[in-house]
Length: 153
Image (cartoon, rainbow, N blue to C red; front, side, top):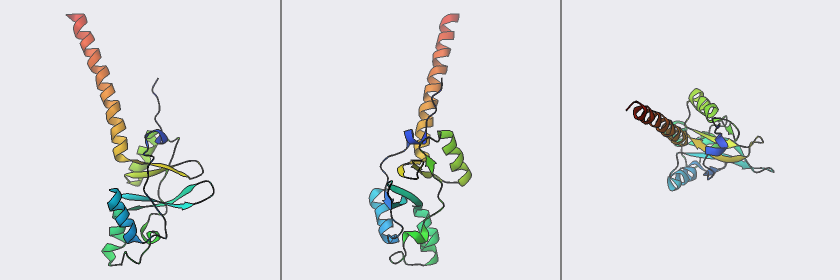
């Protein structure tokens, strides 16, 4: 039977985070240093780091730079997407893909049911998983063809 992969199983568990009070210039430096295109914005809470938004490099450009605002004085809160889509650990890969398609996003934080950050899933992660599954499927098809060829020879 087909095993249903979940967001929690495929997500990257090491996530670069930011806080809403952080200066945008500092957040941009962090993105550059970590070679990432987004930061998951969190607040420290009793259950752990709760996701409050996402800040992408595109958010900085469209919300701050294109409007000639100074990223040295603006905070992450001014540019982040506070209504960011999140995936729960138990969400299926298909559910994650559907949400990404519908929301037109490439990255989603993965959380516990309480909203605590556990990882991030990206379109690249999903491509990797789907490529592995396609390769396995191709192996099955190839094996079947070899068996048919042997049986008729």
